[in-house]
Amino acid sequence: MAKYMDASGLSHFMAKIKAAIAATVTGVKGNAESSYRTGQVNLTPANIGAVAKSGDTMTGNLIVPKIRSAKTAYGVTSYIYRTTALETIVYTHMRFESSAFMPVIHMSGYAYGAGKTTELHIAMYMYQGEFYSSSTVTNLGAWAPDVYLFTYIEDSIEYVAIGLAGNIYFNMMNLDVQDEMGNFSRINLDGWTITGYTDTGHIPDIGTNHCKKIPYGINVLSPPVNNATGVLPIANGGTNATTAAAARTNLEIESITNSEIDTMFEERMS
Image (cartoon, rainbow, N blue to C red; front, side, top):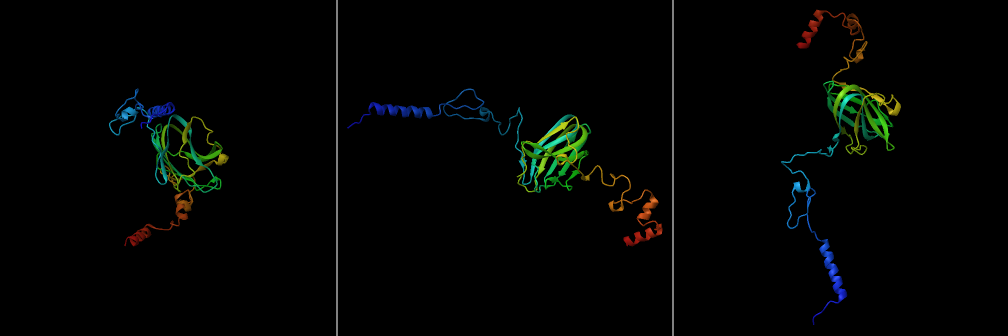
């Protein structure tokens, strides 16, 4: 016997069919297309506004995520300042805390006005709420500004800042960060900025905001002996004297004759 659907069942069945039709895809288009297509649609990079793997040219800026190895983050921020800067400040997002922390900042670039390269390695040691005196700068470039470490507050968090004091025009700089622990738990790699100022006063006074001027451990421009003023002690590689005669006396070589020097040389060479 044939079974027939009553009016209520038919209405329910038709509602199901309409819902199924409404849920199906009726057309496809890429983000760069203006109208939908139906049937078997092939979406190309051009259709969706993407760059093909080869042969395409970009017309806008490409934002590349920060590249990070086990202990180093490359290209954390970059900087171009096209006027004379008396002070340049790196506002990091490294938290300043009381536990031991020893990051290394690598700053490289070119100081256009001076025609000199920039190659600074800033090794800092933070412990018990201060920058320790073992924090040093290594300079491998041709420009060696005074370098300061201090802190600043942003969103109630105390961060580390690096101040460079020097009159320079059109400075280009790239910045990498090393974390000796390798986990970057105290370093937010986002939000770092480098700002050049045409006036002074942005680097705080020594002692304010933990501000400390850090020395150069190695400076290819000024080796320690060439950088000395006054009388250099013997312990530091000098003679502790202002005249040649006094230097010979202090070094205990005043009584050595040429023949004795010849004899010592021959003994060393034999």
